[in-house]
Amino acid sequence: MNLTGGIAWHWLAWRSQARWAKTSKAIEDWLLQQASFSKLGDASEKPNLLLIGASAGWMMSTQWLQQFARVDTFDIDPLAAPLFKWRNGAALKAQSVELHCHTADALQDLPALLKSHPKACVFFDNVLGQLRFQRPASAWQHVERDVQQIQKQLKGREWGSVHDRMSGPTTETILLSDELPVRSIQQTDQQWLTQLKAQSPWLDHLTHSVFPNQRDGQGVSVENFAWNFSPSYRHWLQAGWVRP
Ligand SMILES: C[S@@+](CC[C@H](N)C(=O)[O-])C[C@H]1O[C@@H](n2cnc3c(N)ncnc32)[C@H](O)[C@@H]1O
Image 1 (cartoon, rainbow, N blue to C red):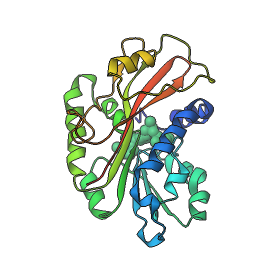
Image 2 (tube, rainbow, N blue to C red):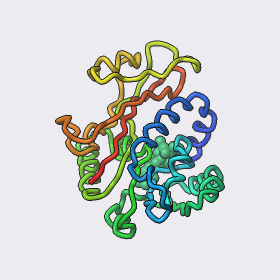
Image 3 (cartoon, helix red, strand yellow):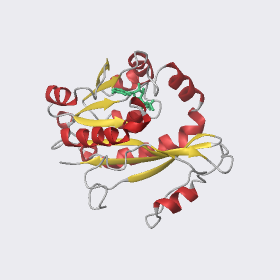
Image 4 (cartoon, protein in one colour):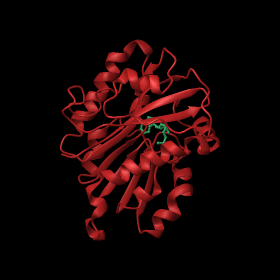
């Protein structure tokens, strides 16, 4: 059973587009700042992208995808490929971006996938925070190992991820009109959670070490986003872009 995708996700995402729009825009702005290739004018220099956990791209920026020469999407959900094409196909075609949508488990044999696309960038689109749902709750150490394994497999590759860091109920109702909380550089995790109006306990998605050297603060620059998932439930998302 797919606990993080499928018809329930599509229905929720479709219904929540207005509520999630501010987070999608913040992620889009961040994505557009990341890739150095975005400034290249020559189409022949555009890279390819492997988009993992793509679903229908409910929170993905079409503008960002338009900067690639070719996009390959991967999702285990069979509804994802037709819905992704329906939502993004025309806009990508208009910019001559080749689109290939695959129904596949892209994490099962990531090394083989990377080998068959040796120069492509990789983006994990809100999927690494879901790994913990694919193992029993008691197996959290396995999940951390899975995450570290993925990081190792990507060595030498340009890649990025946006994923859940934590999620949970809020102490106050979040209105559609409320500003999205923005984390300041000085804030500790605890201060950020207070700003998110987190009501304990929040779920740890076990993604604290997705990026190289994330633990010692010397590695990849990590961006934090609030995601107003529902009027009474928020996610703390983290995103980073890794250059080899
Ligand atoms: C939270 S949803 C995010 C969807 C998408 N990024 C969006 O903006 O709509 C996580 C997605 O990851 C997919 N997924 C989970 N494990 C996967 C795997 N091993 N390979 C590919 N996709 C996977 C799920 O089917 C689901 O569609």
